Image (cartoon, rainbow, N blue to C red):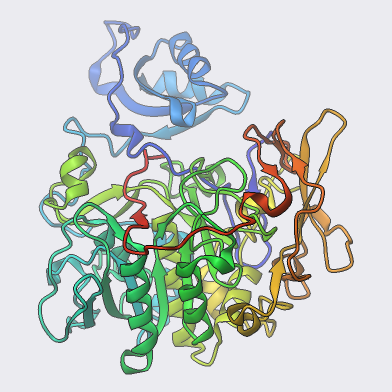
Length: 578
């Protein structure tokens, strides 16, 4: 399939989604191959480049054909790093067959970025990539909007850009520890021993500013409430997380909390409405808080959306990657680890995608993740991490920008505008979707268009969160499947009348594919579907894992939520970089 390109619709998804994969591939060690450059060639004429082709082997052959020297095999992106002369590079660029040549500027001998080791502010690119930089220029920084980050804490040093806003004032309104049920106000934050919470908070709100005037974070002036439910190992329990959410809802008016970031995930144990953590998240949404949650890092298989991302009401975010070329959106792609829908109940998830590969953000070098993976920390303030956790934080920051611009928006209206302005990834060779709706949702989020949108629709039409929480009504999403002659199942989406929505989903009229359909009391998956031969996505990707949907989906008797203090949750702490 030719490289996808994001449609010019609305905001410009200008890239092909990414699979968040093995961090800093430029820095991964690889066997040094035999020198093939002429020994008479001056060393000063040699430059390091990355050559992408149909496969690693093909790229290696091409480099050798022109006399270059391969230095790294980069299997994750089907490329090699190589030393070539200007003449050899020109010969490579003249070749046909989808060859891509990129300068290898950031590789260093010690495996660390060229900037940041002395505490300098580095360019993270993401605000520009998603259009937030233009909002910053216009004075939209998330000012007056409070974000609650439920995670492992936040790096307390003001120099990290988390504690202080753009004017240098303390932006941390409260620090709540649901494990001990302890609240700090106006005091120094306890350190984030694990590091995950600092990283996602940095993505959302870091006020660090580069010499050129760009910010590291999406909403650098937003206020912050830190809910430290996860410990030094990145784990927590349902009870602690639910208590954290309960505190956020109870105190939302006191601190002006409008957004809740949930960059964690657990494997579903029951239908979404029967899960107590999901019920807490639904209560937060109903109270007027925009809940943004990660899709999970169990992709690319079907039906891998985690808890609480499987809640149909909230905003669930998958991940793409810039392919280590932030200035070139044409080679972006969907992260392989990004979890895909549909949910067990037939809802389309995720709603959208955001950057999640090798994301550079603040983390102290003594945090557990940094100590476990020192090769991805620059020795100063910055760490590279991959995951839908990071993608979630980007959307959280964008929501804060939207709410500064339009503070009257409800969560359903925010969700609608985010989806309405996202940029879908398309295959330029066919004009169709590059990735199925169950992979990319409505497409790549765009901050500028979302903040300036005047769309008046609302998401979640047809759903009734009050009845859902009361247990009087249950809902089913529009996802269906049919079996091909070869035995494979194809997912598709229909409207309320059973009509197929074009290309997998409808771009207008309230996003019918995100609406719910009322289930009859005690609805069962009647005859069951045996999906043993895998799933065929609309773009031809094959899902090899099978799922058996029998009556009651193995959950007919319900999951026994007997002890919430032992039901484990984990932050998405480490994913190989892509």
